[in-house]
Structures are given as structure tokens and as C-alpha cells.
Figure (cartoon, rainbow, N blue to C red):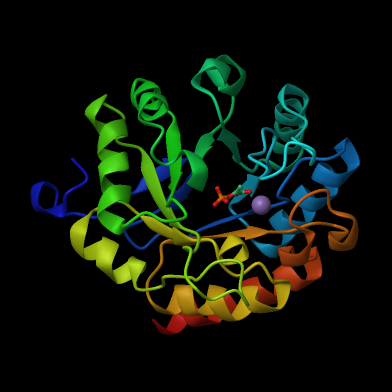
Length: 262
Ligand code: PEP
Ligand code: MN
């Protein structure tokens, strides 16, 4: 169970040596979508140099419009695997359909996106694997519902789960979503599973990513997920919230300073 009552110690999730939880901080960085071999390779090298511990990149994209770029699919996963070979960074990518699981054989962390947090049949399938699952909170889901979704995965025997708060729907429209930062201490009180914050999707604006990343670090998050693109203005998805590798390095340098004092 995800419940801390039955498991008082923090869980430490170890992804090829990149640890998350129990004092270990994970930084998952990379583009919203894998777009070209050059793009993912360049971003992977940039985020690795800045101190990221895992590389993210969407291959199957849950886009609001069916006419928007849907991702490179299997080819995108191949390019992530090449970037992993070049940098040594474990890779994180989203699954949209359990039938695609064979394509994820060499993926290190499978992301369940906000829109699929309550796709219970897919959660059951993921519970039958041994893959680490990055479970994102749904756009309008409570923390208890997030924990119940984690239970669906754990009930099948897979306890390798990282929870992710990525902002929720509120009446505010200035930001893409509203970051619920209190999710960090609340989840820490309820569960032993690690909690990471995604300030990119939570805010939707590149200039808000740094302050929210620092606040998340200060309040005890077990890691961050940050979108980074080598040319945000030309990104096929989520450019306005994407940092350049140089901006990401600046965030990392300050995150490290906060980690030293908390
Ligand atoms: C993503 O990580 O690119 C993504 C689609 O996130 P979310 O499911 O949180 O919207
Ligand atoms: Mn995105």
C-alpha cells in the first residue's frame, strides 16, 4: 500500500542509480516532445551538463487538438534510447495505451500523464510490470484520488512509483494551471512514495518555472520535472513554458543552493 501507516520509512526509488525519495533528489528534464535526432541529443547533453538525473521526452503526446503534433511515437522512443546511450541518463516517457507496452521495454520510467491518472485498466496493466511509474496528478483530481491511483498500480505488485504534482484547474487563467505546492507536505504525511513537482505544466510560462522550482525544493519535494528545449520558440509542443539549457542550468545552480540549507 501507498499508505505511510503500513510503511513508515520513505521509499527510495532507484532508476539506474538516479534515486528519488528519502533525501534523494531527482531532476527530470527534457523537451515536451521528441522532435528530431539533433533536438533530443542536444537537449539531453545540455540537461546532463547542468545536473539533470533523468531525461524526459514525449513520444506519444496527449494533445487537446487532434490536429496538433501527436508525437513521433515508436521512433521517438528509439531516439530517446539513443540519447540515453550517449549521455547515460535514464529516460522517462509517457504511455497512452497499455497495448503500447512492448514499445516501452527499454524505457526506464513510464509516465502516466494527468489525463490518464484514472485510466484504471491501464494502471492495472502497469501494476503487472516492474517498471518505475511516474504518476501525474489529474487536472481535477484530489490528492486522495491520486493516492488511490497509486494503489491500483501497487495492488498488482509494482511498488516503484513516483508521484507528480503538475498543477490543477482553478478559476485562475493567468497561469496554465495552479500549482498546489501544499501537495508536497500533505502527500509526505499520507504516503511513503516520493513526490516531484512539475513547475512547467503547473505554470505554463517559462519565467515562472524558476521561482516555483525553488519553492518546491524549499518545501521538501523529492525532485523536479522541467521542460527544456534547445529552441523554445520553435518547439512543436509547450514552447512557452520551456527553458533553454542555459536557463535550466541557472535553475539547477539555485536548486543546489537551496538543497544545502534545508
Ligand atoms: C507532459 O509531461 O508533457 C504532459 C503532457 O504532462 P501532463 O500529463 O501533466 O499534462
Ligand atoms: Mn508538455
